[in-house]
Structure formats: C-alpha cells, structure tokens
Image (cartoon, rainbow, N blue to C red; front, side, top):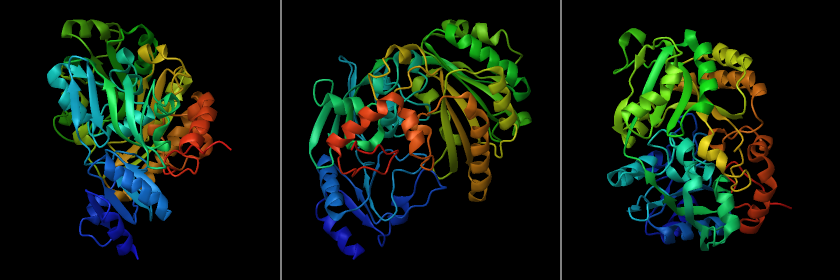
Length: 460
C-alpha cells in the first residue's frame, strides 16, 4: 500500500518521491537534530513550484499529515512527520541579487550561507542569524535575529514579498499590496499559513566587518554580564553583540590550556572599520578584566556568519528552550551563572541576543512577531554528539530554564522552542497578535492542513 502511494506521487513530480523501501530513504529522512527520529511515509523532494503545488494537493487529498522542510535546520524536528508526507524544498536553492535595487530573490531551500555567498560580492547582506547552515525559510518565518538586527532590523523587517502555495493548492504573492493580511502573518507566524517557495528581501551595505569572540573565565561572569547589561543601551547600532555562557571546545584553534573550561563569551560584529569598532566596544571592555583571548579582527561578513559552523554539524543531540527577556537583574544573572556552572557537555550553552535598535522602531502590531519591547532573546541549548547524553542535556536545559524563567517574559522566539512546550507557550510567544493570527489562519488554512509546526489553530 505504501509503495502504491509513493508511485502515485512520483507520477506528479519532476523531482523525486522517496518511500520507506527506497535506498536513499534513511539519508533523506535524517534531521539536523539527531535526538529526533521520525519515519515519514514518503518524502516529496520538489524540483520546482509546480512540484510543491502537486505535493500539497496530494497530501490534502490523501489525508496525510504534512511537514515542510526548507533548509532542514529546525531544532524540534518540525521539518518531518511520523507516518506522513514531507515536502522537501532542499532542491530550491536559487538566489538572484539585484545590486541596483538592493534586493535579493531567495528560494526556500536556501541556507543563510547560500544568501551570504550570493550577496557578498556586491557588498550587500540580508540580516539573518549567526550560523550559515540555518535554513533561510524557517529563520525568516520565525522572525530572524542576528548580528545585523540592531542596525537593520529582523529578517522579516527586510522582507518585501513572498510566493506562497496555500492549502488549496493556489500560488499567491504576499506583500503590503497583495494579500497584506497573509504577509503580516508570515512575518513571524511560522509555517502555519502555506508553503513559501521564495522570498524577496531588501539587502544592505555590508562587506568587511570588525568582529569575533572575546572570552573570559566564567568566574568573572557576574561582573561581565552586569557591565554588558548596562552598556547595551549606549552601544552604537552598527555593533551587534551577544553574550554567552559556555565552555571552550577541546579543539584547535582554541588555546589548549583552556580546553573544557567555562567561559563568558562576548561575540560581536561591527559594521564598519576596525578603529570605529574598537571605539564602540571600548566602554564595555575597558571596565572588564583581561580576557583569556580576544580574537576580534577585520573579516568578510560571511566568514563571521560561518564561524560557529564547524562546532554545530548536522546530527548532534539538541534540546533547547528560549525566552524573551525584558530585564536582567543581578538575581537573574546569579541564577544564570549557577545553572551554567552545571552544564553537562562542552557544547551546551546559553546566549542572550539583543532585541533593540532598529527592531524596536517597528510597531508591535506591524508584524506577527510581537516581542518588540523585549531587550534580549535568550536560548538555553543542551548539545552533545553522543546519543547517550540526550537525557542529561535535556534535564539540564529544563532545569536551567525553570530557574531563570521567573525573571523573563511569558513567551519565546518561536525558533527557540521545542514541540513539547504546549499551546500556552505558543500563545504567550505571539502575545496580543495571537487572535489576529488565528483569524488569518481561518482564512487561508481553515482545515489546519499545515499543523506540523508551532501551531496556531484557526479561529472558531
């Protein structure tokens, strides 16, 4: 019976339909998060938009649960579904830059690195995340914050339009002029409303940047986090800087004397020259102890974006939790440090990404991403290559989150949420925008065909 379903879908595609008996099934179903093991009935590896339309229609008509997989970087594994249909967009990798208009057309299977590779020769960049292997589709639909957010806003703040295949199989354009309610919902509402096949972004002048890591012994963490907290509002918006609690990886090029030791990390990116970049961070660094290492320098923006890639290959064990953070009182910092001191693996971490500057200049109800009044987006991530560490890293992440959540806001960046956190957390993450999202869902996906996500149920 399963082979028959695959054969019927195969007849409708220019791309490939992969079933459980196909030799490449195991590789095709593998997820970025090695902790998650799902066995879809079939995988539609789409070659073009017509294939996406065919796959959506097929899944709807066959009554299959449908998961959408773009770049495949989703932490909770929502790019797959047990026993259902995966619409795999990984072959849609085209990027076209218009250097005069400063726009970039990006297909939905692209990674952040694909976009950086295409835009950098023109001295341009699209604001995105911090790891180049991140899929641009999931990153965008969840909001998209990273090094350039303080200067140029979230990824969604630079989205001009999107091509979307709806639940009924129609292809529509979503923009401020066309289907504006759908466009509003796509900017932060996740994959609830259709399959986005391409995005048109606004790009900005970014070429060489001054940035890199500065690391201190975590014993100085209280002072470092306090100083960072107090300095952030006064930092120029050209400077993106996040703080982290983690360990030094036991690998080159890190100093062997510090392998495995706990650090407080400041990771920065200044859009400008070295002299201005050093001036921007001097009021912070001049108040802090001598770091263990300071590796800041001038480098191409794509090089900074890919700096963490070797430490985060596909197939690792991941469990994460996030929160939006408004205030960071001394008691919260103490709680962070107490929990970080118990991290069970070298790669486990906590990061605080700033949410201010240009992000704040967009109204809370202008997009579905409503956390414009937050100061940071926090992620706690238990990470390890060993499957036997799945339990310890999960328990540590949950314990850490429970210890600091009382100091935080109610919701989290959807891209930092697992799929076991419940509907209440989804509603809290969208806040006052949730009811409007439910109305848009009712209009464009009334039967909730696209529910393998942080789901927004259609309004009654």
